Image 1 (cartoon, helix red, strand yellow):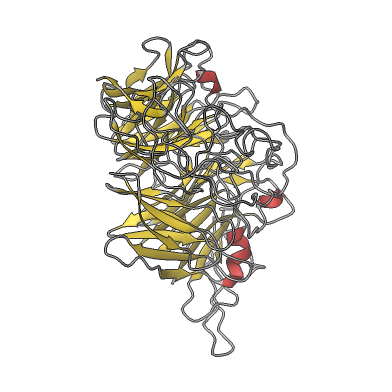
Image 2 (cartoon, rainbow, N blue to C red):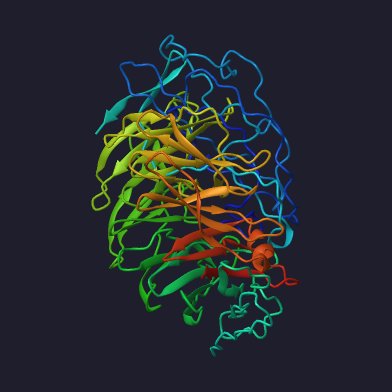
Length: 621
């Protein structure tokens, strides 16, 4: 999805601005209210330091906690982001971000045994991780000029792809009920004048059309023995003063590809040499976060330059050659269901294009339309999709009625057939998917300021809910005009374990490994520095994580064994100090570690003409 020019970028470091709340599967939300409305256009402000405070008290069973045995599977929660303030400016303190007030429901409980289920239909009590100062997974706007380093950055909680079980609240607990089925210039190496490691200037490819001239910043300055180096970097193209989107980052065997404003750039993974470049008639407004098995993606760009232009022009791209494949136009849906903003996701050979109240599936190879996902049941409007190895749909049902709730479904990517449906308890909303296989959902309850993380089985029933008394802080982007189920980084999952970063309150944070069978903590590992550590991906039997840079040291890529009894970090790459300022300046970023190289790029251009904004960097030995 994309944001209008004056809206904050997706993702970014910083403390989440919404207080975590318990989330229960329940009533669907109005499809037109599935995302935070856009903020007014104002200059960006630097985000404040996260609020101080100790860990939240352990609440009674609810979303975020395993429930007592009962006739129905238990559901999990979702946490929607707070209303953003002016562009780049953190929202003002309000109900979210403030401690929950005592009341009959949602009041924090003292640590102790789980409460027994009460009368059927009773609202759930707060789940683990509540109360917190903000919602985990909440987006954070960037500071002026693309971001400045802030050692006290907090992190929003992460969510992985998911399907939700039909949920009902029973006796203070949530229960799931199944309902149904240019010219190039080679890099110049600067010879060391002493015994220190060679400090070679990285390739500067300028604006993408060739050599950007002599690099005024030697990003490899101060390299120490054993440090990695900046292999190459890319300066950002010109963008409007209001900023522009730079969604996605795709790494193939040969090329690193990045979208920025109206262009796609491809660079050699090792030397940064331009491979190809594509310029679109209008700005890019959406892109598939995934690529196909044969390295194809689909991007969407605007139909025109006006504010009313729709995000409805589709273009398939071959990442290996840069060749354009099929093109298409996204049709409008019914009333209140235009293609002003769309989301794209891939699942197998299917491209899913989501509008605000419906979706259309295409064959990603040919562009042929396959099927539509439209209104169903009692006013259920598909509001968001999450792709990957499974295709998950989240719908808002019964808007403006006493039965308003969300529903989660798994769809067959080839036919659109519904494999299972689960109803979410009234008052809860599915905000993110931390994973789609297994399905891990992050839910929130705006009224009760509660959140929950639930894992589903292959049939959509509840497998477990996170039962860890902790403040989690993955990095998640803004969801302005649509929900953004897959807009989080800093979370990872395998078949049996979920890996989440804790909020950095004072000193180093930790990554917590959580059993998807029980929802309980298996082990945790502390960041090797005082900076935040975020899980990136699983690589064999190891978890790969990114440790953010400090003022006087570059970031790190580390690995953590997931098996056995020892879970110590091992440094894979130690980035040079000379690039720390640039590395730490990305408040909205995409990260990847592939074949021993670390790739870092921004996902939002500031449009600041007074600074040479970096778009992408590649690190390696």
